[in-house]
Image 1 (cartoon, rainbow, N blue to C red):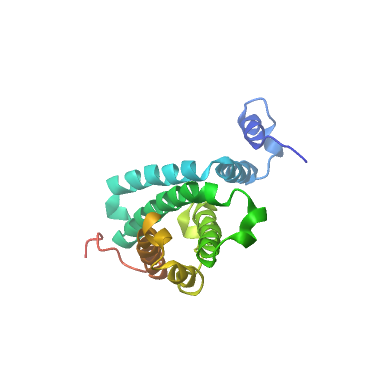
Image 2 (cartoon, helix red, strand yellow):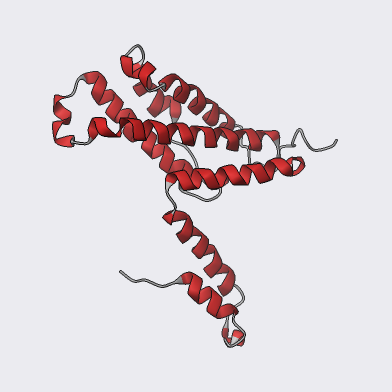
Length: 191
């Protein structure tokens, strides 16, 4: 594996001893951007959600430049992220030995499938540093059918799947309203 310390190189490029006349116009910015991406990828899912929470606190302070839709969407994504992490941690021990999966009940297999899909959603919301560059696992086509298989089961209540379902649906509905579309006017913007 090739290992290049982008942070060190970026600092070297900025040092007064480096021959800056040899640098192209965008090299430092490019390195800084890649460094942010690399560092983002090293964070745990919980650290990424915590970062988003901190960024949302900042956005709340300057809410006049952020639309209500964007704010509500990001707040809901953060809440969903916490729910997903909690669900994944809580159900982790149920599927520690996958060699026994074929011995599970239909409902247990449905929970296993949901767990895998919700991990994919957590990955999707945490993949990019900026939520506006991401997306979601389709709720109606993928997540909801598995949730319906679990409705009425002991798992649905035990793991609070109704909360995940309601919040996931809210997130997707907000996302479908295009919270980052700058063409939409914010309710906070003076008329």
